[in-house]
Image (cartoon, rainbow, N blue to C red; front, side):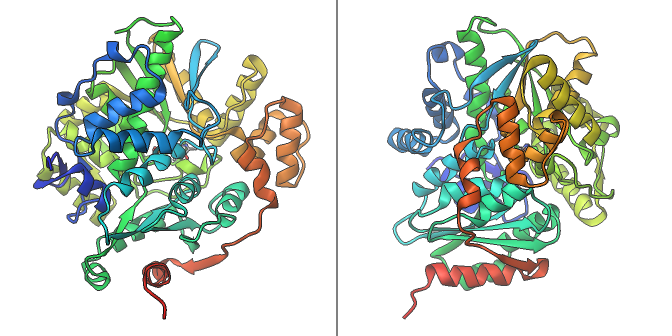
Length: 496
Ligand SMILES: *Cc1c(COP(=O)(O)O)cnc(C)c1O
């Protein structure tokens, strides 16, 4: 096998794409990265008539060379053939003078489906005969359900999802609690998303637990720290560009900008991968909500998470540690893994780090960053609906506001705004912005919104209200490891 991946914190580590997917992240605490992305240039001309699935095959083959063509073709087929409500998978919609890339046409109506329909299919080809893997996932709302849908009822795999108790929307909670499947486990934890995420990382890194479980049972992650989830996201950057070429709105080689509502920095990092692989991108506009650690970083070079954690209208982006930002630091420090390790140790110990002016400048060359308040989210949803008859979810609205701020600086490059969720996933905030009178009940809100806007409710969200609740566990955040142990036992140990 070609050992084409390394760790952001230790360049002496070399491992294959398959090993990287199986383990999720590196024992030294770092994330797996492909060092020289520019070696993987994609010939855009060859994609001009390609479908989404064809583009997926090309991108995946480049980044995952240890997978056979058959394995890639089978994974792409299984991931995207029947689970999305459009064959375009990620359709591009023209709104006013920009283009919305709708990433929410999968089985759970959030962009997470794109990575999480694919990751389990890749995982299948990574496990050997006797291997079993328990997937651990921390979720701020959308990842959980998308991961459950991707992994449920797959042989040799189990999935445990941890979400912040009272930290997700009503419909997000219902989506998870009603999940069927013999291998799905869900616990609400008394803590926020960062607690869930850092504890999952700790458990995945626990060498004692690892030896207790033995060589046949491994733990892995479905968070965007797993490259098997990140890589499928590179595809829609190419696919949206090709859609603009196909509709004659740009010609091959023209530059475009992407605005990306950002939390863990996975989505926008996938865009950066696409750019390294030859996609003509001018700027990535990174949009945060009021948890604006990244915006301050872009202004000062100081990443400081020692600020109050806020619950906003865009809860899937309520994050203070953007895990995937570590990968960008790796690339922008010219693969200086000692440097990245030092920064991450600083972050761990003091809650902050500062990068050199040089590194900050290199980051600013590709990225612009801003944020949106809750009030601005509401205003954006309302004005785009009234003026352009397009209904955005609150996360997309965060992107919209920062996109407009950026455009005021004078850049006229064609703009693609990534839309990361169906407006019906966050009906209450959307209804408050566009309806005169908002019902109390969540289901009624959804129905009223559909009645007024005439935009159909995605089937999975319409049905979730009638399904039985199958999962009710609520645990303390220091009980997560014990929970994992008992669920591994339930799922993988023979019971006599
Ligand atoms: C996860 C998520 C985001 C943030 O994406 P990252 O890859 O974590 O930056 C934005 N919007 C929605 C709706 C999401 O679910």
